[in-house]
Image 1 (cartoon, one colour):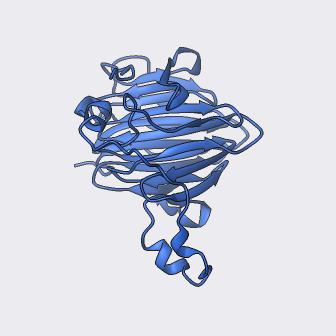
Image 2 (cartoon, rainbow, N blue to C red):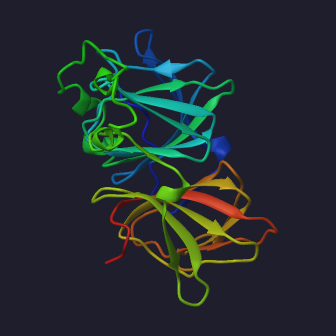
Length: 282
């Protein structure tokens, strides 16, 4: 069972969309998935995957979709239907929504839209820690996937609270985001989608002309620019002092890298980021 490529960087790195590592995984049984792998350090893994209309991924003996990692799937475009085939749980996320699940969760994905599906994925601990294909091969093979939970028939929606307590796949929409204002002089909007001991995934929104304060994190950080333009400043890096990102570009910061974000455009700048393992420095 071969793993996916693991692009790594010796220091802070701008990752233009045009230079992202391309990969296809899967087989006739699991289905094939197109991956754009941005970074796979010793602490965090970030990629975008795509499925055509009506496309899906399931699992096969060589490609088992159960890992020892926390994962967030953020839908950039399309409609993602995600199932836990071990329990029959099925959840749906549309553009701008996300699905979060923890380690040891079987998952199958389906594009139930008329347009191509594109999903931003954050994954930690990363494959370099043995959490992906090597780990999946140690798990008992799921021979009988299911996509329904018949126990709720005859008592829905009365059983909503009971069903919610058993969910392994958590859909995250705008009301679920934990918002923070980070920085004292010019606070910026940071919304946390999910945060565990392994991974924090969030969204930052910069107003036109706004900039963040210089800051660091207690883990590696990777980001993806969703809309607008973004300037990344690295005043202490000893290399190129700033980079300009366009939508679809990524950036990687090793743990402890001091950096600053600036929006010099006349429109909102929206980015998604993942930090692993700790969000706060120190």
